[in-house]
Image 1 (cartoon, rainbow, N blue to C red):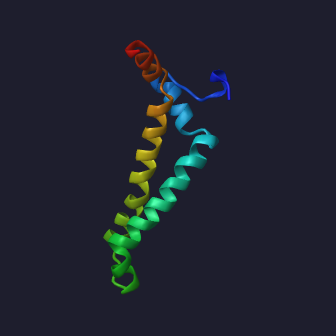
Image 2 (image 1 turned 120 degrees about the horizontal axis):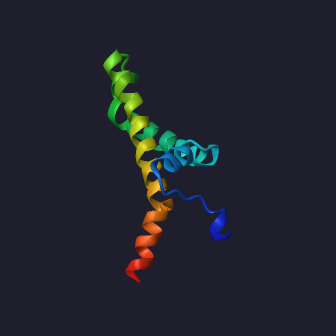
Length: 92
């Protein structure tokens, strides 16, 4: 894959557009689904299976998906930043 074909960004506006591109969302949503499900089973599984889930439980479950989505998205943005690539070249 050529350098021009790889996603990259240098401004916050570029980053926001890249964050919500279908290609990016496919990757980050898959990660959030897997990690969020595992976290929910580990942290709330007993409460849910026991039939004792409250609104607060379901909010926690939702956050178990939001957090890995944000982390994977920020990791993707960090890896595709033109600023980071320029700084890396300067370190050589």
